[in-house]
Length: 475
Image (tube, rainbow, N blue to C red; front, side, top):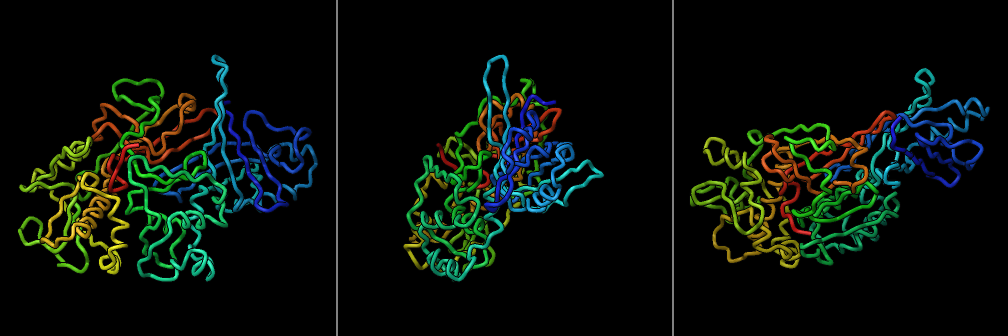
């Protein structure tokens, strides 16, 4: 039996519903619990709990089973059966706790908040009454709900932004307030952390197709501003840029040559020879084929990363992070002249944005030369630096998306050793002397808690710095 206590709390969806609080170490007895709590009739078996800053639709799995209390108390089995049949859509929370006898300290944390997304198949008596719960995070619910649930919400509640495909100025705070209405996330904490980045303007630029989901709407608005939205393990919803100095607890640090007994294993992959190492961006209204480095350039044309006059990926001293150091494999392959692998992208923005200086300023006004140090602009002298900034921004953004899979590492920890620390999700850990990856600092993009009765492990998946979003900042 593990020393970690696991509690699964299944809440009500309707006021008349029963609840269930299921615990693996201290099963709740029938005679000292609320009759509305059916947790005493279930045992926890195992679970895989996943939180991700990129993919909010990822599923977590929890396995429970009915126990002997169901027969001993002669309870009408239909009550439990009805409970199982109405599990879909119910809020669910996973807690873990650990009591350190040596220090006399109790560690407790929330590991997941979400809802049961699939209907369980019901009681399987041949399998000991096991029930598999498939769960998605609270934020993930916004990924399955349309933004315009009704004509009223499309034309009134959201200020008419979902009933047209032309560019709009959207009230940022109002959107954050109303887009979670009528969902499980409406009562969640919403944390906005700008760090050293300039705060978003009161009105942001948006081009929204009416049938987009609410989460797609938020992501499409936030991405050009180098913001991500994700749910922390404790259920808080966070909107922020990515930070180059947001370090996780040292307990997650790994030295490949020296096991500190916190981590169990490490694996990784380097895909630098298989993904594009340069992104060329043009507007769809300019020349269809950019002639890179030929002296015949389209009107507005950007490339990322920074390319020198002799067609080499070069370092820059503008930032404390040098792209060519972080992506050594990509830079080395590109600079060999034998692995120049560009990808052409066309900015698919509404032409009205280029004609409306107010809209254009909303997007480009928060960036300056230092923010966009990873790109270089190839252009005719249009005399409009704002318009030139737009393809530069998108070049970095598209390259950051490609670089998510440039190289990656997965570290497995003994959960009992790291339960005392704050979650590293969205923070940076150091992985030293692991030759598969190019740079020791890596961002934790996903955490996976594997809970069993005999012991638990904690896995983190990492992505390179300067990936996911086009611009990174300091806290």
